[in-house]
Amino acid sequence: MATSLTQGPAGRVELSDRRARRLAMPLRHVDPSLVVATVTISGLGLLMLYSATRDRLERAGIDPFYFVKRQGLAVAAGLVVMVLVMVVDYRKLRDFWPVVYGALLVPLVIVISPVGSQVRGTQAWIQLPGGFQFQPSELFKFGMVVGLAGYLHRHRGELDARRVIGALVLAGTPIALVMKQPDLGTAMTLGAIFLAVLTVAGVRVRHLVVLGLMAFTGVVLVVQMGMLEAYQVDRFTAFLNQGSDTRDVTYNLDQAKTAIGNGGLTGRGLFHGPQTNGAFVPENHTDFIFTAVGEQLGFAGSATLLTLFAVVVWRTWIAARDAPDLFGVLACTGVVAMFAVQVFENIGMTMGIMPVTGIPLPLVSYGGTSVVATFALVGLVANIQMRRYT
Image (cartoon, rainbow, N blue to C red; front, side, top):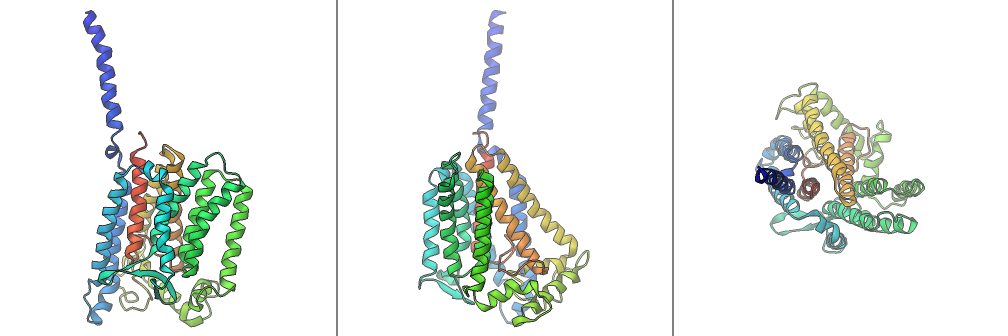
């Protein structure tokens, strides 16, 4: 009887230890909703990319799967990168954030040198073998999130004016390099990540007000001082005066709004969009890819896509809430800001309620670097969520 009594508590302790070991296994805590929603969005993006470009490419005698094949390679590479980011304990990124930040900052310097490639007045790409291009500003979104989260985690509880200035230098340097290209849309996204992370980190309200005023003043100066190309200024300001037709910009917006309005409740049907398949909508495989969703899949398809994005943002916010340290909280906050700003701005500009800034729709717009960077950020969120018990 005595032996039985002594073995009972020991057995319970052993069972508790096994349960603790199971809880400490990161792979048991992968968030399926986050991963599935992300992969589904990319799959829908490939479908809409094919639908939006098939007819145009066939008329030009080009392989109708041209864009899909290239985007598919980017999705495959993005999935590999996401898994790699998930495997490495995020606390290593936290501890070595200056290395990550610096390594991703270097290409931003290189791209504005003679090595960079210019397209439509924007020098934002580096040519790679095989006809591929690399856009450093897109990949630096990962560097911005890791760099700011790492810096503010290191100085938690010490966010006085000097530390805020340090954070401003970390964010302002890449933003200035991006504006040198110039790429106002990406600069706005990086700025939004900066402000969101600072807010959650506990920066004083007066500091945020000053930073907000500086950001607004900076945008005005950029537009007024001629740092942007004429077509970029026209695109940025066209939504304020949609009755005019400056360099055909408002015409393009009218075509985009017409395409979305044509979709109705259930859409015209896949591959049956007179505006998008007829190439009336400009850049309908990149900046204006949402017009293909709206016209061909209608309100139902658009709502489905927005729901998938909402799932990603919601699960990322849950990861921030459950994160075991400040770095995890801030990194997830940065990813939430990136998704929220890009989705709202991209869809808003196709509807004429936001300025046209060239911001891509994450995982849907054509652009390999953007796809890989987005998967990397989702991998970081999943990494933090996986290790909330360790």
